[in-house]
Image (cartoon, rainbow, N blue to C red; front, side):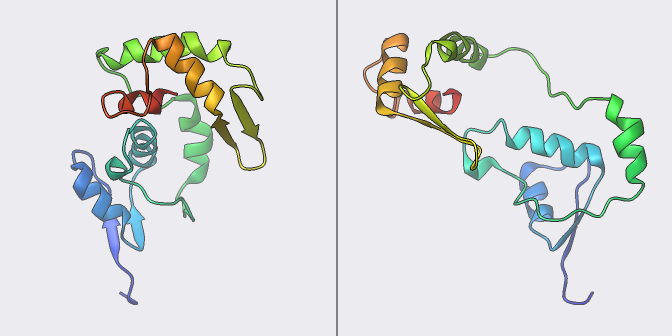
Length: 144
């Protein structure tokens, strides 16, 4: 209709189906589906695993219900702990040891943090590894 493509996000859809729906010009879904997809996208280790694309515009029906009534119900992704929880704990131990402007820099305007070479070396020393960026260790970069 009017040359626009339409997609719908439904419970139980595979990531590939969700990705296809999000690639449409207009995507319909519930606030929970959009919210959980956002949370899952922020937990991925690869850009290829993302289902959502850029967040540009939203038309929200009954926004008062979502912003007021449902605001009391947080969206939480949980499950059994796996091997990655070890790395979250390890990097949570290391993070407070890193020094601003020595190991990393903060760009408030861009809302980014950049890790300096000294920071990478510090993390490698803390983890007891030679190269954080070698293939065997590359999954650890996402925890940093």
